[in-house]
Length: 220
Image (cartoon, rainbow, N blue to C red):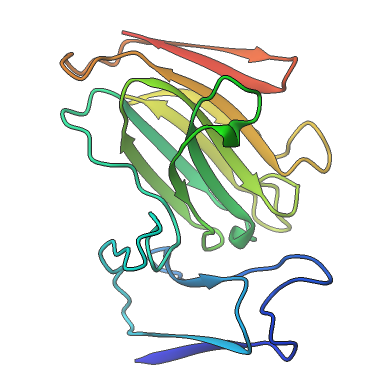
């Protein structure tokens, strides 16, 4: 067993006067997150065993997030007729990379929707394959990078793709069009009803140049 401890002499964690920071501790062989944080007092500690096994989901403080990863996981939907697959290959700064999945609101601010799922920060130079079963509806997928350089690393470049019911529909760029941009948005719409049979169907994607995001409609 080991104990990881991070300390801050200013007793305000990794904020606030000179900007916001964060830390993440991961198990390299599996990519699982052991601990993460940003704002704490003088110190913060996490005890873990090696080999490390990711604990089951726990939300003891009832904030809707997993106590270890601080991420949101969508409720179970059965049968799974709207399956979103997310493949992320991190660069050599995986701590910079996170994602969010929101229900789409009627405004241009994606945070006006409801946060359905989130992931990261991640270990570096590792591949993650995630999948979520979703209710029919419109969603916004957001990939965020704190360094504002996308998945372009120093010695290792990353990548990410999205698929729907096993069909790849989008491959994200390593670097983003606008320098200094810290996120990329992909708009998704799932039209399968819960009582429908699972179909790969067809997928269409077109670039919405006005907002710099991709709009996709999935027709089965």
